Length: 94
Image 1 (cartoon, rainbow, N blue to C red):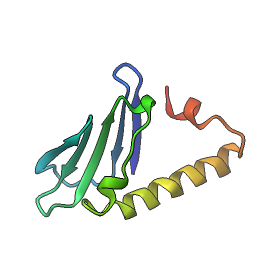
Image 2 (cartoon, one colour):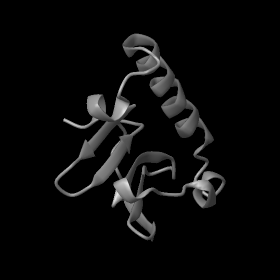
Image 3 (cartoon, one colour):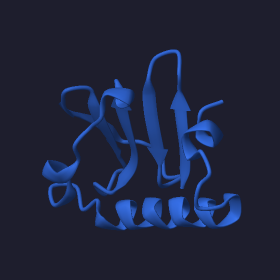
Image 4 (cartoon, one colour):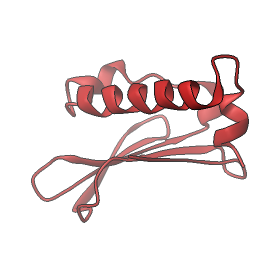
């Protein structure tokens, strides 16, 4: 998984697969999901990410549980490497 945050456009992108993108679904409110030819999630893009965002309505629709589990694992690993009190935002936003 690759996580990027673009401060200039306030966009958070989670790339979960290297498969080619077949289509992009605009799911509403600045949230986009890229899918491969088989309908698997390739990436999520969230605009205005600093304002907060909700994904619960998409979890079952796009089978995001493995993506969110992987994201949680990456955050836990980062905290382990950087320390519990670390500023993860400062590390992710450069």
